[in-house]
Length: 354
Ligand code: ATP
Ligand code: MG
Figure 1 (cartoon, rainbow, N blue to C red):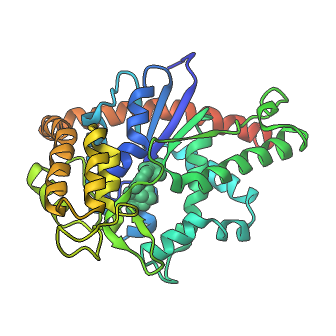
Figure 2: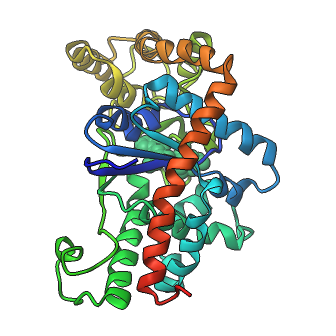
């Protein structure tokens, strides 16, 4: 498949199903950009093994779940390529070569790695492969030499590493002068683009739970049991919203409430299209003139309206798994063609074609 459009790559780790954080952090952008970019969406199943090596069945199922989430949310396989990481071996080969270009202490300073170790309770028992995954992600991206990478805020450190690897590769193997600007690398003979992140309209959506020991609200995450899924039915959405964390000091509707740092209002501000209602209700909440329950019920309506059409389409794809698997096989083929090209070119630059 040759295309004149600029290329876009992004994806998800199959550790669960997609949630509202994915929607505002990245998915919404992907759907809107499908016509203007040649899009590649990776299902990073190898990365799922970094925290769940003992759950191969789940990883397989979640890979299919996320493919179905994509299709139901509006990713069109006629326009975009959805593929499975482990089916594209060039990515793993690139990962090995790229791992030489990042000093180990630099990896250990990556703030997302630190946050994941803390928030996913990995203790000191995380595997060597867990530490390798950011470089794996560098390879996922650079194998496709994209122009933009739409992601949530937590991915910024990984994308910065991607830029560092690309600069270093171009300097060491392609003779690019180290004083050149990022934008000049390709014209100066560099092989790898210095990619740009594209952050969604919400950088980091919080989850439905309370703060951690440091007092920070955690991001909504598949692994943290604090997510409202794009596949949740209305009843589940209602239960999750009615049970969500709000202002812990507000015991009755006449108490003054805090709007800031309160997931209830973060969600309204993010998803409720009726901005006038939200700002008026926030004032009433601050003054103790409206109850949590009323505001939560309104939020349930807003979220169900967003999620229900996606969920309904999902049912069709769940009943037609052969079609979904065909989409993935076709995607793998297209992805391999591009990644093999990059691998060949990198080996050539590294003098390793024999
Ligand atoms: P896991 O818990 O396994 O890390 P996750 O929910 O963080 O899962 P990922 O597959 O790691 O999801 O992330 C996929 C993409 O979605 C990334 O670009 C990430 O930044 C974005 N994303 C995930 N959660 C959020 C969120 N709460 N807000 C904004 N963007 C998010
Ligand atoms: Mg994550």
